[in-house]
Length: 201
Image (cartoon, rainbow, N blue to C red; front, side, top):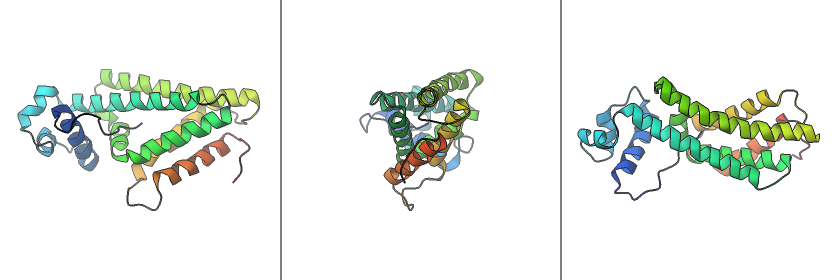
């Protein structure tokens, strides 16, 4: 799922730490990043990080929780715009993929560094991920029931669609060949073909 740039004043210490952590974790990985790396990039002393976060792991958890909850809101809003399963799935995938392309560094961090979280904190993130899975699965299942999708296993297909979208954060680069909108539109078409929807193109 995706972690966007925190929306708070640039001088806010927590925001500066969050931005610095995303960049550091994205460049070096969680285990390759020190608290000094984060605090220095934020223009603060190493001790300042502990004023706001008890540990580097707690900071990662907060980034992951905010990012996943934001994506859950995003997919729910995508589905709410229509009652047609084809449009719902297309909009959801397009919004999801665009978000993971635009916020690719943060999305890469909060999807591929989760193993660094404690068991309890990981469980919280997995619960939100489950809720996102349910939104997608419900759309696919309703499409099958309505006869507009033809997939034998809506659950597996839903997981495949989400996995493809998440992986965009791993390979997308701002200087690359395609824009976020181009990638999102292409993945919309791929997802609809995966569920057997009748689509042009």
